[in-house]
Length: 294
Length: 121
Image 1: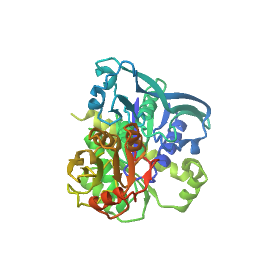
Image 2 (image 1 turned 180 degrees about the horizontal axis):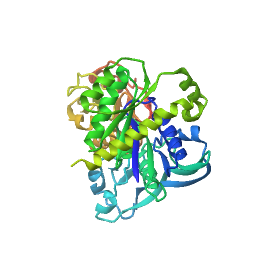
Image 3 (image 1 turned 45 degrees about the horizontal axis):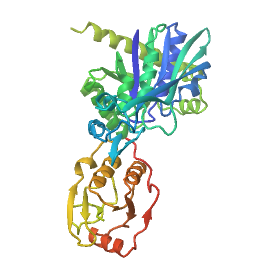
Image 4 (image 1 turned 30 degrees about the horizontal axis):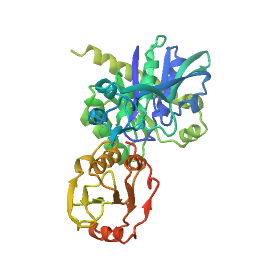
């Protein structure tokens, strides 16, 4: 199974555009592809892919609940909590579920066994089928409940769904940025495709994303969207850093129009298919080269 | 009963820090004698999350009956309410000493709900 993550430092560079078109192309080529929408705070792959027969499973996290009759207000729980999610005021314990990271330390260490854990639903994982002419593939979508603060448990559930049998290529559409949910999305990927645009903002955030990917011990390649705008600093940076550019998607009004109608580029502008085909060959080559490296 | 005032420096003549959880210092002052001490909150000011909870716990442990600050978020508000600590707003650009004078003159508005939304990291 090949695991490819699509990420970017900057938002709005075209991660989803790249992911949905690549997924469709691979399905058309006969690959058993599964697309994971791990941008759980604003999943949008479904807008382009219209999955049907969706099922939904809740994502639960565990939070501590205090038994006031047993609690002696000793503060062990508050002291061990790295996130200030539990505190002791006078003789009562206060729990802040939105701050809790469900590490389990406080119930484990409570000397009076006055804490137990209860589950709390913070999101959903949806699985649906996307039809292509003569083929179909699975779209797995993580959805963080509106108002919830921590996406990572939902991201983890999405990734776990990706590990199931039945796919030879798993594509992950990561959220933007370089924070915890991004790291969780790209973890375990054979290659990370960093999407950027050739502008100063795009380059700045690309540098951050490259640093993140390298800190995780992963390998990155770059896809440039809206190629032709801005300047050549992004290309120069990629050359200096030894980052292969696997796609240059031109800055073309027809692409923006197709996108705004919710259409796939590989369908609306078939002449672009060869760009995605070429990108895929480069991705496979990059992964293979990595595997034979001593 | 003692009062905690959020400040930008460790002095009663420092400006009130408009943030509660991430205030640099707390001036703990006895309104009668005006004797004060400073409690360092700078470590907590850099907390990844839950600064309001931690700050609320710190001032509650000081045994204060009131906090004078700028804004309190939902977690700080809940923590202070559990401790029975009243919250007053000092307004912009005043020193802790001036805020204390206005508090004693009962000129400061009392806060009964969170004044800002949570800052989720």
